[in-house]
Image (cartoon, rainbow over all chains, first blue to last red; front, top):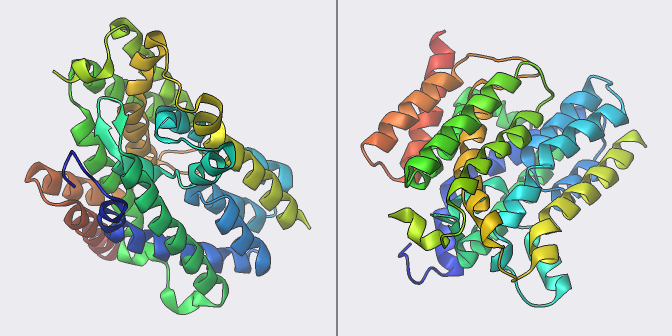
Length: 229
Length: 101
């Protein structure tokens, strides 16, 4: 991944280890969805259209506990509201016709977005699209295997995959802490998320934490590239 | 029927959320006043994700084997291990901790 000329293939290669993890979670989503009474087609359609793991797990756990459609929808929509600030941060990478931008935007997921970040608010389009494609295939095929009866795969927690995701995000966070403002904002975001977790439904802490980026108002006016020094 | 209602509504909402930036903003540059905060979205959201994925539960903080995974991952990051190694080390530490506790 040289800084100058990343290719779509670089994005695909960079995301392989993460994609393997995502595949297992897709399989466990399919398995859980089926056992929670969602049937066969609905989980598959959900993975292909929603393509956002945490929201889909929230839906399954709520429907599985007979929580009702309203609760499931509220939780999932709150969880995915983070994609508004996330997609705004990468908006300049997408060009061409509206329909093409609509389609490509669906490849934005936490992992592809984080992997494509260059620090200082810059992102690499080819890394985002390449990684997003691989993750999409991994998520949908994983779901299919899980729905088809992946009981043999076991609980992904048994191989520690739930502890791998926060470590992944931490590894992607560290290169972002380029200056004092970035470190302060990250710390504030973490504190907000921690403080709200016991009191709000899943997803809300992340959306609320995005308010910490307002610390960036102090240095507005300078172009992003100069903020790295 | 409930499942399909959820699938359609959540799918449509997520589709719109992801399209918000690329379709509404497009290639236009953000005004400088907005660019500062937007540049900080990545570190802020990543930090929040680290927290919620480590200790997040259903309306509660849960301190479990994931902490050991993040700790081992942090150590791997500190010695500049490559990303796949960080992920594997964190998963292994989480699994082993869960086995012995």
